[in-house]
Amino acid sequence: MTDPRGETILTIVAKETGIERSRLVPEATIADLGIPSIDMIQAIFALESHYDIEIPVVAERSGAEFTTVGDLVAHVLATLDAKA
Image (tube, rainbow, N blue to C red):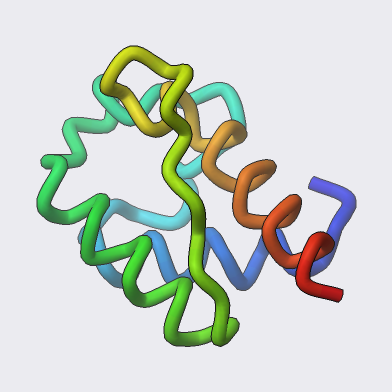
């Protein structure tokens, strides 16, 4: 991950989901990591609070907000960049 904000995002996700930070690699799927949707929602809320942003819903994903950890990070970074 080249953007240093990605590390902060992953640290927050690890804290909120209870998943070891080392397992949060871009290609890892949320399903394979076993992250319950309620924990993912909590992580999104924590990211929104930390960065003072509102992370928009990804409607075109057929109900799945993010398939991989990389999808999540990219979406949060895009939201941050749009705010800047």
